[in-house]
Length: 367
Image 1: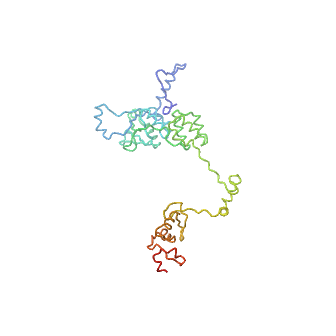
Image 2 (image 1 turned 45 degrees about the vertical axis):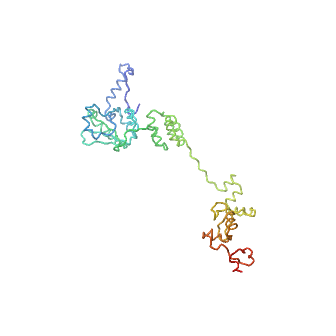
Image 3 (image 1 turned 30 degrees about the horizontal axis):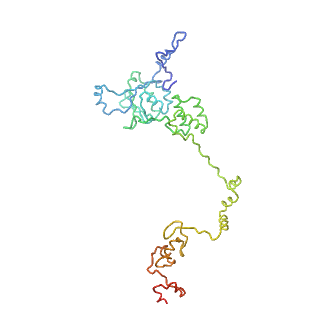
């Protein structure tokens, strides 16, 4: 029993059913039942796709002259019960795509327009609201078959100027299948299309969520392999969170030794023990040179602050420099950035240092 064709017959010239002993053909009985169906149960819509031309009245005479009119598609056997079950109208639009051979977007992007007999206004029905469509279906059933046969239904975008048809190939799976509602909706539509058996459908929906995702991933890989790469979340498993363990539990399980246990729980004892094991002289931590700004090379500390200088800079600035400036000036020149003083020598403090400062220009005055 197909969608939108409940109770209908597919009769052909070479497919007449066998007659019963009374000489009555069962196919004829089905045709009689179909004729008895009223508009309340089943309808046939004459559909036009696309917006109405604003200059239709001006162009109507020209179109008649040229023999060009809008194409009308016949959508037959629209069953009310099946339409009511099709909550998002995906199956209805699938039939429209088959009849028109055109690709449409999601149903909620479109509206249904029609001129109801006796109404001065153009009626608009939103396909995104299920109750509006069902109310319009029941409203059509109040018309006579003659008046209903004259109705033309126009399907067009809700937003004026929007694109009517899709240029790309529409996807079969249009939503993320990460919860039971989306999974159930997709499987129901897939069952109507005939792509899944009822046993597989029931097995997926009755399984636990983790197992259901695995079964669904297998089904997608078989039916829509081109789109399966977009649903890798069905096969990916979440990493289990490791249980927080205390130090005592880690030691009991043998994950840490007694020394590691003491080092983590008493870091101050670890620091004392490392100092006790250290051999002298302790290695000096290298720092940034305050003179050349090179990293991890300075070991000679300033006499007044924590800045340090590297060996090559100290040798160049205070040992081999032409002005023979003393190391005492490092804090003023390089640490405080005060620049080189005009007088590059310090006066001798004691006469004991006369030989060291014999080249001082003011040596005679000091003596």
